[in-house]
Structure formats: C-alpha cells, structure tokens
Length: 321
Image (cartoon, rainbow, N blue to C red; front, side, top):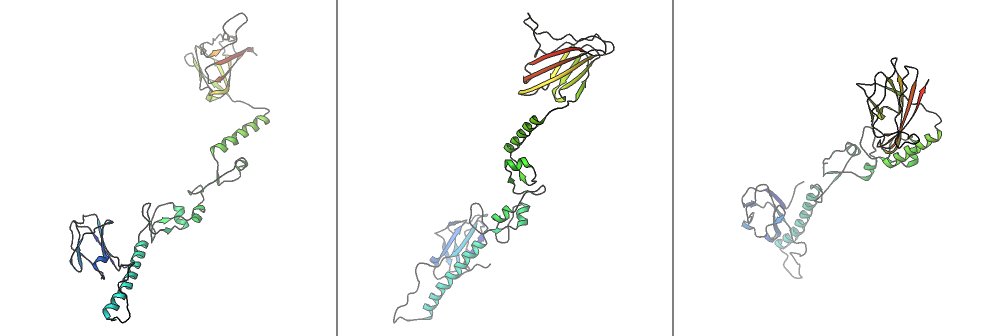
C-alpha cells in the first residue's frame, strides 16, 4: 500500500542529499532515522532534500518521515480575525497530514510481520498448514497456530501431531489405537501381567538346546535358554557359563550329560564360581564324577545364581536310566 509521509532509502556510503517527497507544514515535523537510530542534526540543503550528519553505510536503511504536531493546533481562530485562504489551508492540511500519518502507521504495522523480537502482524495458519508442520509466511505475516487448529492436529501412524496420554486402566484394557503410553504405565502393565501369569501358571515347557564340545571346551549360554543336552563325544576340560541373569534376578540352568557309545568320557574345568555341596566331614564342595557307562546313563546338573553369576550353586543327580 502507498505511504503518504514516509521515504525509505538503502544506504550507499554517502550523506546524501536525500529527497523528501512529501509536503510538510514545518521542517521541524520531519524526522530522520538510520536503522532505527534518529539523526537529530541532519541539514536541509533545499526545501526538498536533506543531508545526514554522517554517511549512510551500505547495508543500512534510511527512513525519513513526517510527524505533524499532534498535541498542539497550528491555527487558533479568534473573533474578528482575518480568515484567509492561507489560514484555512494550514488548518485543513494539519488535519489532512495527521490522517495520512495515521494511515502510514497502520500500513507499516500491517506490512511488518511479527518476529520473536518485533511486534507486527501474523496470519492464522490453515488446518492443512498446521498438519504439514512447516514454517512459512502468509500474505500478511508469519503463520501462527490457533488453539483450535492445534488441538485438531491429532497424531496418526502417518502424521505427526498431538497425542493423548492413556490412563492406567486404558493401558490395561488395550483397545485404543490413538493414545500414548508412558514408560511408568507400561511398566505397571507388565508387572500386573507377570503377577497374573504367576497366579494362573500351572505347567510350562522349556526347549532344550544341544551343545557341542570343541577341543575339550563347551559353553552353556543363558541367552540360549535354561535347559541343555551335552552328548559326551570327548572329555570336557573347560566349561563356560555365559550371559548369566543380572544380579538380583534368580537364574537356573539344567544340564544333562550323556555318554556316547565309547563311554568313559570325563567332565572337568568347572568355573571357580560354581560351588558344590560339601560332603559330611569336608570343608570343600566336590564336583560330581560323571557316569561313565556308554549310552545307558544320564547325569543331571542344576546350577542356580542370584547375583549375576558371581556364584553358582551346583547340585546333581546321577546315573538315570
């Protein structure tokens, strides 16, 4: 929109002269600003040009504006006074110029988009623009989000947006596909699920994993399960108990040793962390001596830990048919 009493120039590293394009009633009504700082000592080479006190540097902006007196009337009528054209013109121009300056202020405000540091105009974003979630400017200023559009922007599996937090009962019910679950409520859900399962569990099965001896070494990895079958195809001289449960969680491993057709295979190399029952009259536990009969006997070893594998309590039963 046109400006009636404002001139704007880009700095060019000179002090002018700069043209004043608008009329004025008094030179005292004209003010000059360089990037918002007022130049109060500018001069008038002519009635339509001004020169700034210092050169206006490139990259800065010069603004010349008229601010007609708002507090004091320039014409005061008196009884018996002479009512000339000049007096009437001055009085009407005073009001006319004030109106123009008010329009300039309004147009400047409307044309200046608001920022985090400057007041100005904004434009309410459309729902589609809110859902798109990208910054941008509208026709009259930066886009802002109204509460109604914000709360209508619901998150889905394909769109970012607002999520409602589920209550504990809603988490437990598990029928809603649009609410979000916090870690605390999820933990409580699984705690209740485990307690429910513990009360209802009457029987369970465990998959038994076969392990292979390699150069006398064998590994029983807790990550592979709790039950292991080891066919003794050679003597065992080194045993590793890998990935025990964390401290404070009870873990248990069942190992079944069975001799091959040759028999007479031995099992040794138990970790020092495995503690065996002490025979009567003995101060130390003794590892079991595995049944050596070919194919016909089976020995079961049970190892338990509750401190992350620092100590395993070992028990055994032997020569099962």
